[in-house]
Length: 267
Image (cartoon, rainbow, N blue to C red; front, side):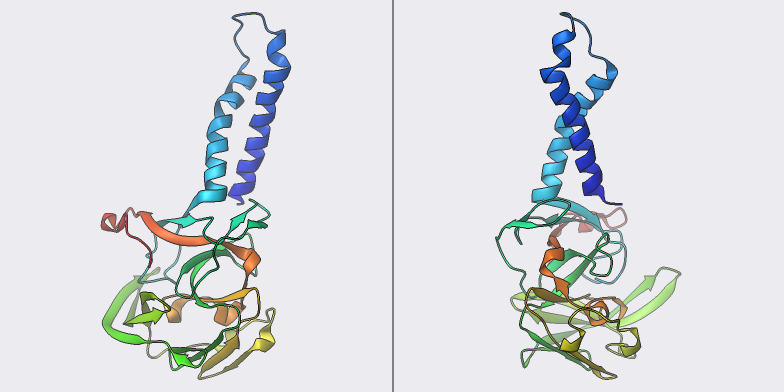
């Protein structure tokens, strides 16, 4: 469901009724005559829809986390807020950038339109920016020849949907200036070559059973989930074009099962 498009249609419809009444219809009503319901209701909803549309399109937009691909940073059921202007001001619906603000940086958590189906919004962590050489071998990242610093953080266990118990190792990883936690399952390969699809700039990557190496093309980004072995990400479906960027995730504003998470910043 394209909520932005629905909001835009409602905005245009209620705004048209408001304009029609303001400039034409009200002149035909006698003093004190009540407005018909089909005029009163759209006029009442128009300012509310306008405010919501502007807020969601240019300032912040709420999202719900549907999967565990970003564990332990984000839990299933987290409701988060996404900054819509930090990576540039864009036209709603068509997502065309009007004003440059900042570029995504390594380590930031970004919401974007899934390249294989832009009607879906995905959330992952930025690992590579344009021009970066990304190597992932033995569950460790190397960027432009520099190994990414990691420190052990003990065990982390969780239950997936279907009551599947998953045991992982937790590490603290440093991407740029951002320190965050990742999860690794020691017995699972870092990448499954059979699951890699054909995607634009596929020739920029080389895969084998030990891992992969990719060079990020201009205007694109390489993203991975923090739950490294339970994430469908750039390893499998490729680079994220700049045009698909939605915004930067920055705050958990609600979780029905974990109230203590409310108000936590996303790092």
